[in-house]
Amino acid sequence: MLLLNLPVFETKIAKRNGKSVIFDIIRKRYIALTPEEWVRQHFVHFLINYKGYPAGLMANEVTLKLNSTTKRCDTLLYGRDATARMIIEYKAPDIPITQAVFDQITRYNIVLKVDYLIVSNGMQHYCCRMDYEKNSYSFLTDIPAYDTL
Figure 1 (cartoon, rainbow, N blue to C red):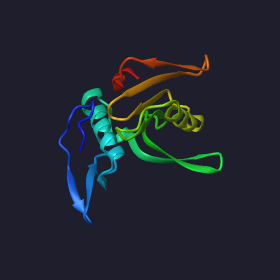
Figure 2: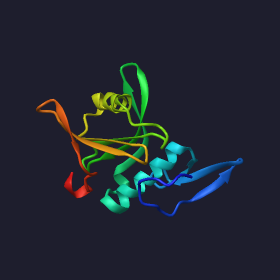
Figure 3: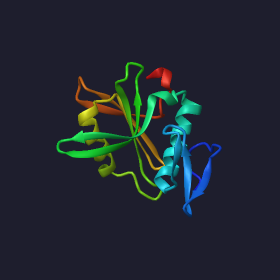
């Protein structure tokens, strides 16, 4: 798989029914190894190992209802009070981060109303902090450490 703009980690990759799978430490099971999953696993390990995010407060592929449709957030970070604090959306490395990607994560936030939104394709990462009082957001220069959220 492609080298990403994220730290490498010790992957657990296996073959199941002739297809490659990777171990997801959040879901605690093997998942089909797609380019997007490759990005997710790298990003989750980065958050846990370099930014101090508790694995127990993270969830992958979280289902939510938006109007009459069912959507899935790639990763959600919860606060210790069990409220959603951050939505993370991943794309495959060859998918550019466009306004449409931000529109997608913003739609999820209509329901969740989190403090932070992150979008990554493994090569580029964007993080913004929501300001609900001013009805705006600001882009951050770095992904914040968990203890600064």
